[in-house]
Image (cartoon, rainbow over all chains, first blue to last red; front, side, top):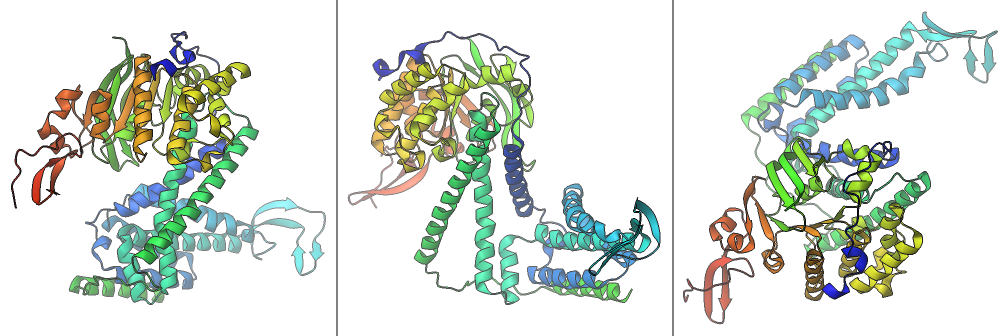
Length: 308
Length: 275
């Protein structure tokens, strides 16, 4: 073998130290974005799996928590005033603190999604074009009002008091819904969640899809992260956008192919282990007194929120 | 001997939750042949990735030829080129490493990135293909190769850069015996030719064959011991402690044996008892 080593591999003639100051290398935004997204998915999974088992919510039976989630989502959607949404927010915050969840990470995620899916999407409705009312923030002045089909654009376009109130209420609604969902997700191990959903008669096909997605999103996010590291290990200079695009397309095809192969393997493994079309779960525990008590407490609080 | 890689108190944890490395200090000399061994999850691959400048340590520092290696320092074009043309990383999963349309493109990718002339790059690729016996695969896309062929191409794609240091993550895992033997001989020859080889593995057979300096990682992600291969593989207590060998019951004809087992090295029968 030693004789077949190409001579260039034996050539040690190189600079002894780096030539610095040739400028900075930028990893293309899209590559960094893919890696970041994979990281977010994995981080979410890890936090979910490793959430402290000693908090208040972690000790409650999964069935109680799933019912709590459904009940509170309905309450949050029914409340019409901003103030009552604030009360619910304070109550959920107390539950998060009692459950010893990492508060900053928790609310960073809630506020990020709440900002996008609550505030930004609802923001145009604050304009007097959509919500009539008392103008408090004029934005544009037109020469005359316009009429188009069923739409009326007034001469002065701006935000109304009623519109802003509506946006704030909707944003709080989204934030509260997300908080309740994340609270349950972060405090309930996945198998327990599946058991609870099964008890609630969620169709088996739906549970199979959730189970497979849960496992394979994590596996493929790890593949994506490895792909990124492999690229990084061979990146000697900055690449042009054409090369980056080609790399991304190639890797997308690779992940797609790998996903297909893995799906077939998983299905064969499931068939090989006697899978028909139903999920049979074992180990349903009896509800403890503490579970009944906690459930009653959460239910009573929910009723109170409905009344105020 | 000139030190080429140096780690000072390196710790790493995934997502601030899962520890992977804990206070690792290590020096690797030029031309060394080092094997990092440990049970699954002990942090071997993470340690290799820190050395390869692919992960920034949560604490501590990593140096290559006395220059600190970090995400920040590798943003400098000159330093990045200096480091990447000297340190090659071969991933455990060859699929993630191979992303060019054909095998030949894979081999040319590194030299062309280094702005080596096209003629010289081609000459390197041809020589490497001859060495690895993959000339007949040159126009084939990587997804149409077998596991062993992919591993050869992955190694070849790094060798065309002619790095000083080769970081190999489980290089013979899942390969057939013939390919394993071929790669072992190749790694040995590259080390003889002056390359620094760092291999992460849990395969004690490979460590014994390579006659490497051995770094043992414990399941607590710390360095348990550093020593030569005879010293480490002769220490049964150490290998039991780090979970690299275990007690095993098996049958020879009508006799059932129970002994410490690593599938290769501790296959002795002093304590054999008839059932």
